[in-house]
Image 1 (cartoon, rainbow, N blue to C red):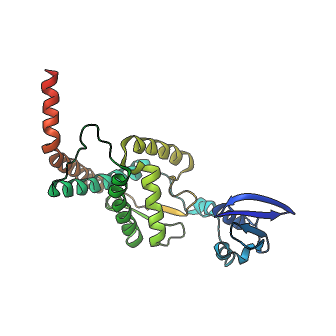
Image 2 (cartoon, rainbow, N blue to C red; image 1 turned 180 degrees about the horizontal axis):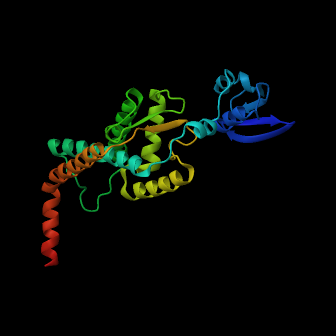
Image 3 (cartoon, helix red, strand yellow; image 1 turned 90 degrees about the horizontal axis):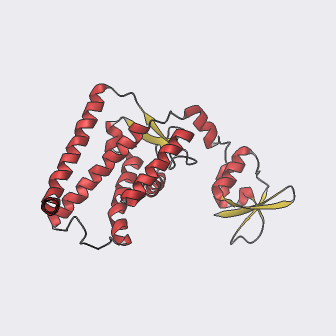
Length: 253
């Protein structure tokens, strides 16, 4: 929602709701500050706007202030390692379902996958990840690398928070499963993580990925599980990809 505010007798805006909440946390917008949004009958006190009223219920720390106290160092290989493990695990499940149901794994020559097909493939991944994060706080990849997602104050994510986070991950980081968008998203995320110490989908959201120390045995289990995923994926796709590969070799000769 977009807001306009009156400060020092001057109308300012537009501001997104999260920007106004930050102003409230900073003390720049008080309970009696006049605000307006589309659909409102007139200028109201900020504390009387339903979307903002909760910000005045108790004194809150800014996300940046909590992050300064609680935020862990950014560990790129563990974050991306867990993410790609989950991605390949889900891809393996999708591939297995297609093979069992007789659906071709590769599109026909010249055929471009529709937007609805992409959404239909990615949406279950978003819902599954959100369900896991909202209930137990981790996904298989994060469990292997001993990481857990929670709020900065240590509380577990709600179902809504988990869904929003997963949606951001798949749009901003995973590029909805499209290779070049995924590559671009991860390069951007890596740059942002190294600069800000937090990834795009957790910044300004109050989410944190807590990690515990890793030992050699845990890393070994992760590497073996990842290798098993790759081998299983190769075994499933080879019956369809193999003939194409052989034809390419014959054409080269």
